[in-house]
Image (tube, rainbow, N blue to C red; front, side, top):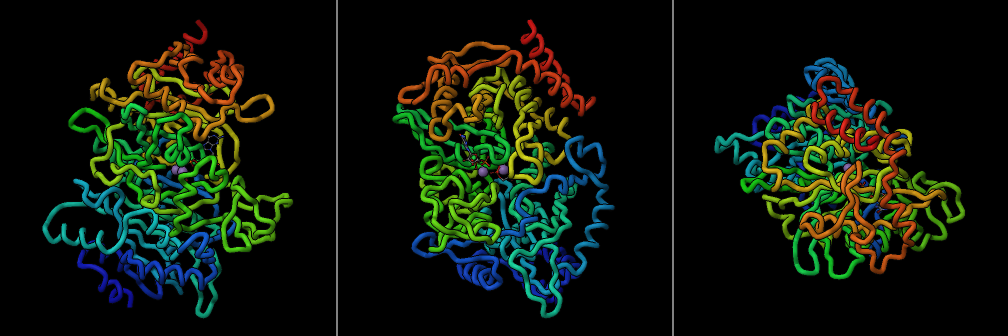
Length: 608
Ligand code: GDP
Ligand code: PGA
Ligand code: MN
Ligand code: MN
C-alpha cells in the first residue's frame, strides 16, 4: 500500500524514494501530500477539532482560529534531548549534545519502526525564504501530526507550488538541494484505539545530521521541536551551510526604522528565546515621528552583498510569539495581527465566550479554563497560561510588515544588537568599539534562562549570539566564522554592533527601564551613533550613552533611575571576568585568539 500511495505524490525520484522508505519504516495508514490549499486547511482543522486537539474560537472574536492545549510534558524546546550528530564529535563542540550518527540512526530507527500506525503521514514540501531566491532553500517535512501541518502552513511557505518548483528544477537538470526533515509524535494507535488530544512520547529526540543536512525529530509536538523548518533547519542546519558558504544564519529579528526626517535604517537583533525579539520587531515608538516596520521576529539569514553590506532576509512566513505579556500597551501590532484570525493559540487559557486569554492581557475573564484544562478565575493561585504559551499567526497579517519583506535580496543591515535578560551588570545600551569587539560581546552574551526551554528558569548562562541552542557545529568555529566575516570585508560597510538590556532591576526587583515602545529611545540613540550625532562616554566595556544623549522627552523616569539604567559598575563587571574566563576555557584551542585578547583588554581596563 505505502509505495503505491507515495507514488501519486511527486515525479521527483529522490523525494519519492525517501517518502516510500519512511512509510515502510513507520507504517502509517495513509499518506497525504500537502497542497497548502484553503480546502486542506479546512480539512485539517476540522479533523483536529474532531480529535479534540483544537477548539474552534468564536468567529466574531478570532475568525478561523483555534485553541490547543498540549500534554504538560510537551511545552517547550528540549535542549537536553537535542543532538548535533556530526561524524566527528569535535565538530559538535562543547555546547551541543553529540552521538555518533550511525548509532543515533540505529536507535531512532527503532523508535520510528511502526510509530505512525493508525495515523496519516503528511508530506509537507516547503521553502525557507523566497521561492524566487537565487538558491531556494527547500525542505520536505514528513510528519504524523496534523497540528504540525496546520502550524507549518502559518510559519513557512509550503504546499504544491513548492513541490512543483522542485520537480521543474529536477526536470531541467538544475542542481538544487532539499533538506529531508522527519517528524513523529511517537504515539502509534492500535486498531480501534482512540487518539488523545495531544499525542506525544516521553522519549524525545531532536536530531540534526549536519553533513547530510538532515533532521530527525521524535516524541514532541511542540513548535520548536516539531516545526522542523524553524529552529532545526533555519538555524541549526542553516548555520552549518552558512559556515561552509560564507554567510550567517542567526537568531535575530529584523526591523526597519524611519526617522522623522525620512532616513531609513535596518536593525537586526539577537536576544535569547523569550527575551524580547518579537516585541522589538513590532515596536510602536513612543517618540514622535519615528516609525518601525517589521521584517522578521526570530531568524535572519545574512550575506555580504556585492556592495560590501550585510543583507538580511527573514526565512519565515509567520510569527510564533510568546503570549503572556502581550497586550494593547506592550505590543499593539501583535494584537492587531492575531485579531485578524487564521491563528493557532497553544497553552493559553480558553474563555467561556470562545476567546483566549493569558497573563498580562487586558480584561481578565471572570472564569476560564486554564491550559491544564482546569477551571480558572482571577483569584486562582495557578497561572491560566503556561509561561511559554504561544500564538502562531501569519506574518502577512501584520499591518506594519515592511514591503521589503517580499524582496528576496533582503535589506542591508546598519546595526546589530545583542541583548539578554540580566537583572544587574549590563547597562541599557552600549556600543562595541569595532566588529571584533562586537563579536566578543556576542560570544560572551549572557542571559537568565526562560520558560522557552525545559529546565530551570532565571539562571544566568552564556548564550553566545543568542544561539547557544541553535549553533549546528563547534561554537569555537562559529566565533571564528564571525571574526572572519569582519576580517574579509570592509569594516566600514558592515553593521555597527551594540549590546542592550531591557531587564535591569531595582532593589525591589522591579524593571527599571519601562521597555516595549520606550525602547524606541534606544533605537534612536543607536542610529544617531551610526551617523556620528549622539554623544557617548567611553567606559571599560564600550561606549555608553551620556544621560543627555538619550532622548528622554516625555519619559516618566527619575534622573536617578536613568542613571541606574546606564550605570557601568566596575565591581559587577569584575565579577563577570572569571565567568567569561571559565566559558572561554571550555573551547580550548578552538577559541579564536583575538577573543582572549579582547578579554585581556577588558580586564586591564577594569583593573587599570
Ligand atoms: P522573544 O521570544 O525573544 O521573541 O521575546 P518576546 O518579544 O516574545 O518577549 C518575551 C517576554 O518578554 C514577553 O513576556 C514580553 O512581554 C517580555 N518583554 C519583551 N520586551 C520587553 C521589554 O522591553 N521589557 C520588559 N520588561 N519585558 C519585555
Ligand atoms: P522565541 O522563539 O525566540 O520567539 O522564543 C522560539 C524559541 O526560540 O524557542
Ligand atoms: Mn527563537
Ligand atoms: Mn519571538
